[in-house]
Length: 262
Image (tube, rainbow, N blue to C red; front, side, top):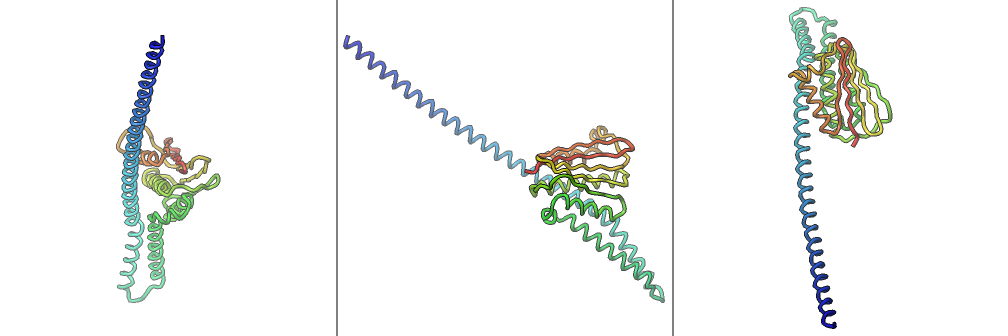
């Protein structure tokens, strides 16, 4: 009887020891697997972050190139023409025996207008200047610059209390709005455009509405002419936002952009 009890005790100790080592092995295995999964997750996050910054940088380069192209065209069409006219006027005065004060004043006005336009263009290119003010104020200055050209009247309205926005998001949003305005100037045949900023609790809602000729959105997106719209959508998505456009023939178009603050 005593021997049986001893055997049972030994068996219990052996089983307990085996269970203990199995539990230790399970804990160690779980810890190794958890650590490996964590490392894989961190590595995936690092790759995703690198890819995000790569796409963000590429998008910024594309936006800068488009902006420079727009500005180059504007300098050629507006400033270039004004200075060409001033040059012709100077040549006329140079060949004339009498100095025309009236024409001299016209030359001074044209050169002054060209300089003013160049200063406005330079301001619209400065990222530091954009970051130093709210997105609403930056767009309002851009709208004033466009209105001064006489091509189209641009107005800005604001609703809600202004909220601070990440600088990268602000820059990209500003360039998106610039591209929307350039598209309206080039294609919409509009006389007016309104930019409405609605500061909502979680995001900024920007509405760009024109009174132009409108177009078939689905048709534009399905062919090459919709590439600009796709680019805007991609850039809005890149900074965590969304982009939508509605358009009716002969009634104009409305672009809506929603961008979170953080």
